[in-house]
Length: 273
Image (cartoon, rainbow, N blue to C red; front, side, top):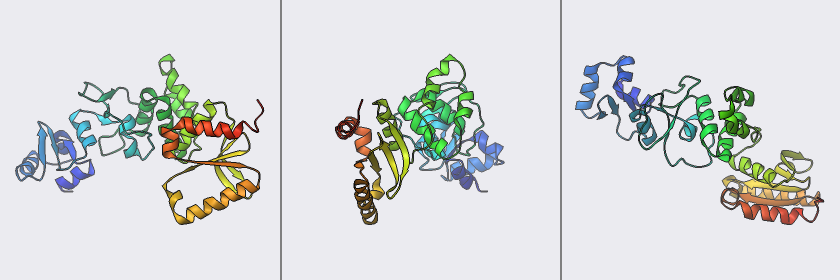
């Protein structure tokens, strides 16, 4: 494999020691720098033009992307873009990043990215409970981890909060906002069933208190065919005696109080407490 092809394979940035370990010669690296094929970022680090900023931060920081910064590479959900890069650094500290310690699995990417288990454990220890739950729910939904496996790797009192987050996760959500909505409804004492199949209607996102259907609409729900399908489902739901509310991402994530107020407005007429 050519040097530039190998660099693209590992994230477009690498330590020279990594390239030497892959079989490239010092002379070949020097020639590639001299011709402008690759650039020398500092002593011991080279990169292709246009290398991804997060990969650059990881290699220059002598670490691996982890926690919220590794989710996209692992193809799992995150609720918000991290403000700062999160790095697993086994020693030392990089300026301007969130540093994580401790690793239980080897790196499984050619890119400078921590393994999935490390990414999940760091998220559980670092992120707000809701954001961590979204990350773990995604991996659980894909069958790439289990709750017992993660609990075993979170021993002792110092990991008590992280273990509590696992109680919020069940692997049934089809999207990040379903996790947010599920936890929001249950936090307000609403009996919440998820992904319920109703005769004549189909599978609904939420069934609250046994009669209120709440559907969460993604961008596909704006497509004409989906609009017709949603209209038929809404009509069928009403004919079967259910009430229906529909919300989008911005409603749930940025205006949750409005959602809860409207849900309770429907529920109060029929729920005895």
